[in-house]
Length: 72
Image 1 (cartoon, rainbow, N blue to C red):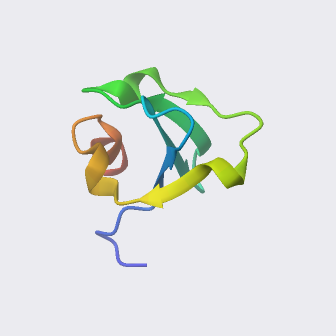
Image 2 (cartoon, rainbow, N blue to C red; image 1 turned 60 degrees about the vertical axis):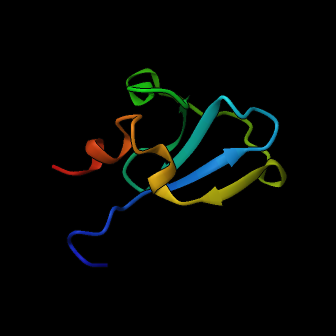
């Protein structure tokens, strides 16, 4: 993996369009609001059903704080 590549994946829960789901090896699975600074209110995901999530581009969560959280 390139150093400048973000080590996270972003998913949309097809049953809850108001929240994103993210995964990284460092933090595991988390859910957060799809709004500005929504990453600040992230919470662990419990009981995730893989049939209801679709991977999407990280750019879709550009204003949530997700991308900034992984750029140290």
